[in-house]
Image (cartoon, rainbow, N blue to C red; front, side, top):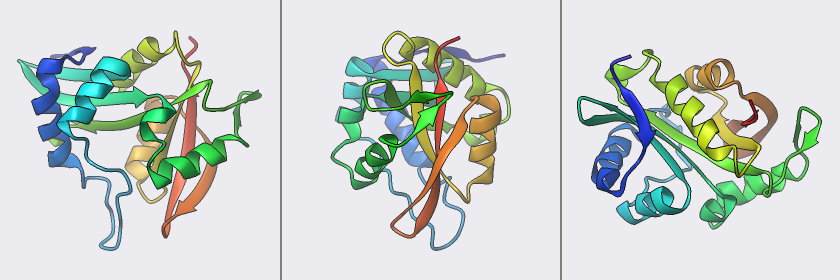
Length: 182
């Protein structure tokens, strides 16, 4: 492993924003696909680093990937996340009811294309789970149903379980959850 995994610093903000913008359309599969998340601003990345969880992968001084998690309040103004919060009221994992008080929103995760398939994803998610575990026993995310590569990565490498499926603005998604308890 030639990369290191660490907490993001405020000095990383510009590089994180640049990396995300370079990969924001990666999940889009078809010509009519839509991305319902938005690119983070520098102010939002700073807020995530200061008040939530932001983990980066760095190789030779260059950020090659990141993953973040945030409390639901960070996302609650966005219609897609309000929809997911409503779905949580009826979800459970391993027999435990999920809610906005025992889960956080995990993702996005972005990895430089040339670094994919080299263990960066697993290393990022493993560290994120460690960081989040003291506050939330579970993390929740969503993945577009037509994004087979991302679904496989989340289920196989991040030990996430599909807890629901939903449609939002004419696109289908899988709602996934994982435990942070080791």
